[in-house]
Amino acid sequence: MLKDIKPVSSIIILVSIGIFMSALDSSIVNISLPVISRYFTAPMTSVEWIVLSYLIIITSLLLTFGKLGDLYGHKKIFNTGLVIFTAGSLFCSLSPTLLLLIVSRVIQALGAGMLMSMGPAIITINTSPSRRGKYLGIIAMSVSVALIAGPVLGGFLTTYFGWQSIFYINIPIGITAFIWALKSLPASRLTAAARFDFAGAGLLFISLLLIVFPLSYGDRAGWSNPFVIGSLASGVFLFIAFFFAESRIKNPMLDPGLFKSRLFSMANLSLLINFMAQFCVTFIMPFYLIDFRKFSPSKAGLILIAAPAVVMIIAPLAGYLSDKIDARYISSAGMAVSSAGLFLLSTLKEDTAIFAIIAFLSITAIGFGFFQTPNNSAIMGSVPPDRRGIASSMIATMRNMGMVFGVAISGSIFSSRFDFLTEALSLEGLGESAVLSHAYSGAMETTFIVAASLSCIAVFTSLIRGSLKSGK
Image (cartoon, rainbow, N blue to C red):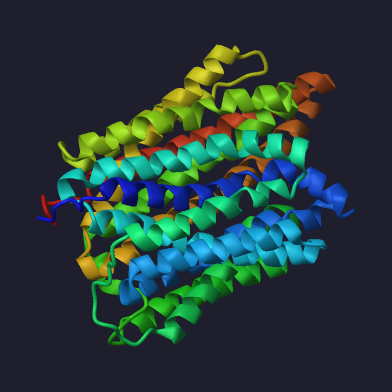
């Protein structure tokens, strides 16, 4: 069993800073998009690529960065990520055109992907299995803090210092973290250098790119669009080809043998389902609060803070408990609670009390909080030391893919159900306001019931994954 390295607090803080900045820049930008649109005199359909480019690049390259960390050292990749992310932030703040801003976001995403993929691996390598859950809980908490702080901080900085300031803020933090990491992060190269699978990395990147892009854009272009269908089909085909090819080479980019472990495969599947359900809430609730209930954006933001605030409190507790109790039971119980919360959210109506909305969101968040840290700890503990970079990046990949799938599924279900109910209720002779109220409530009900059903599936997949032996 490993002993915790003396400067473990420095390691935890550094990793938390890296992941915090990466997560922050996925949420801090959204609130500034209208201002950026006016600044460059560009339509929102163009400005949205500031967000999409960041998400697509990170998701497509996480596994590649994980493998690089296993081969050449997690510290090297993490530090490189700090440099690239900080440089990308500088370029973003100085961009004179929208095109250069989007290109700079791609650079920033390369660094963010390195930071996200290395974080859990560095924590796992430098702490003992008996405390792994506790420390991974702190990492989960940093993500929740970033989600809370992003919109609030972004709105403040944009209002008083201009949109460029949301990128300026990363520069001193990134430089300080890099200098600190050089001195404090221990080297963590665990395997003899092997030939990097460039062909596999390229095939994986292209396949994930072809899958993530249409999922991010399909709701606007239309799911029947030939380009969307062709891109998805090509991506799935290339992903299958990637797995087929990887099983036949000596040093694969992603070892298919890892998925023979029921613990590894089921925990990753559960994580994917978890974030699909979670982002159904994240995507639909702002529309319910602002468009349907007519709350101001600031009031809606305060209501929505409830969920990440609860996760921030619960995640470290769940991590501590997972070090003492079989993690699969905690994860399964968490998904059961989140399923109950999602069923409660499906009952939201035009006159639901604010207290009830916050209570339903909090119940859902309690479940998500109890699921994630024990599940992530199980994933990290299920692989040998020379595969922890890949395991770490799998966590981030499943998280991002779940986000994309969740938004795509919830958006499609809500839109189709809303259109169907609007037409059906109009034929019954109801007034326009009554039609809108019933159609909106009905569409939300269907969407959240689907999300709750997904959570129920994750209860089962978490239970059947098996237990993690102590010290593995």
